[in-house]
Every structure is written in C-alpha cells, then in structure tokens.
Image 1: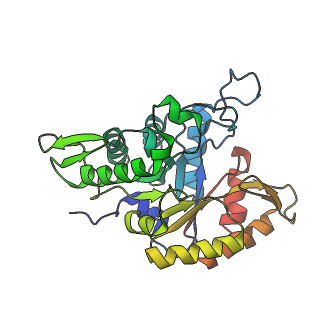
Image 2 (image 1 turned 180 degrees about the vertical axis):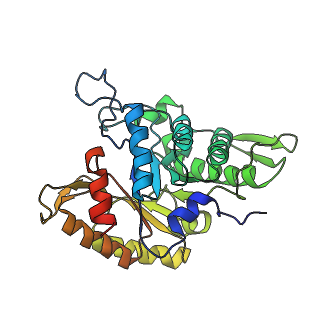
Length: 310
C-alpha cells in the first residue's frame, strides 16, 4: 500500500528543504460576478486562467490553489475564483502535469463529508495524486443560515468531517455513525485516493485546540502574520506537530521600483523585488515550508524570475 500522505502533490510541496511557492486563483485578478452593480471586477476568463496556470507550472511554481466560496457576499469583497472548486480543479488538472493542486480551503462545516470525500478522491485520481486538501470551518457569516447550519456547531462539524473523511478514504465498506448519518458496512466510497488518505491541512485554528490540529492534520495552513507573531506560531506548531509542514498565504504586489520598501496591504505587502527576496529568505529561515502568493497575471513571470529564481 502507498504510504499515508505520500501523494504527488504533497511531495511536490513539502519533500525538499527549501521554501516552495504556490499561486492562488484567480491568477488574472477579478473574482466578483459581473452583474454586481457595485464593482467593475469581472469573473475570471477561463482560457486566461488556464493559460496562466500552465505558465505558472512552466515557471517553477509548485502549487495552484483554489478557494471554496459557496455563495458570493459583497460585504466580504470577493468570490474566489467564482467557479465551484471541484469542477474547476478537474479542469485545471486536465491542463497541467505535475504541479500540486490545493484547496484553500474546503468549508467542511457547510458540506456533507461523503460529498467531500467522493469529490476529493475523484480529483486526486484524475490528477494522478496531486490534490492537497486545505480544510476550514468558514468565515462568511450569512452562509451558515443559507445552509441551515448552526454557526455555533462549526467546530464539532469540522472534527466530525475529518473523522469521516479519513475513514471513508482508508476503509472498505466502513461503519460510521454520527450527526452526518450512518453507514453500516454495506456501502463503500469509490474511488479511493491514490494514497491511503488525501493530505489534510487545517486552515487557521478551525475552532480547534492546536494540539488537535497537530494530531489530526498533515500540516497547517495559515494566513499572513507579522514576523514576530509568525515565529511564535511556528514554535507552538513544532511543539505539537513535530516536522509536519507549515504553509501560509501572503498577498504580494510587486512595485515598479525593485528597491521599494514594503507597504502593508490586506494579508500582505506591496514592495519591490529586493525586499520580497529578503522577506521570503527570512520565512525560509524561520521554517515556513510553503507560501501561497498572489502576483497578478502580468507579474507572474517577473515574480518567478526575480523573487523565486533569485
């Protein structure tokens, strides 16, 4: 049997000693529905996104990350890549070869674990084992009522989903019982993933104790943090999870001046390439294993060549 968590995507992101880089959809920008009267942003153009995805792979990026945003909430400001995560990653898988495909992140509290297990295993098979599954409890308040989910039960639903996912992937004709339903051993989930289980990266704290995340996750996916805070989080993570990887998302906007100092923006920085080189070197030295960055389409090659390939 294939070793647990040894799928191709996980190896691509975390097998080496150096910091690896991924890029999040939409790569070309956009993300809000065109019919929204309060914004000029338009949905991503499929052909352009696929062109940039294949270009990212050619340039040496290690991961492509798609967000799970079931419903658009204007107050939150974006709709991710707009298209549903599963068919979108299936489409991306068909146009790429080796780059990891990640979710950032599937909202387990709003989805039935059987549906998640089936969809994820399908993408994993279609991509030859390149799927890495970021999972979360969600952060858009109106969605819980829309799905008939008690917001206060997010943490419990998350733990229940993780238990079901692991069991459905690992066992044949499993027996499961809980709030999600009952399986009595007469039904099985097919296909099974390429490895014993698809890697799970809890996102943020997911309403859990850090020790639980260290025990049940295959890594930790977090948001941009100030460097001093990040050092503290990394130390805490290593204490409970050993050498399990730490990944983070940071928004990156390249300034025209390569020597420009950093200007804080939401979840990241606008800065020149020289500062970004130093910044990512410091993340690597601190022990961050993977970063999800956000260079816009026109800056994709420049970022790869001047920051990653320094």
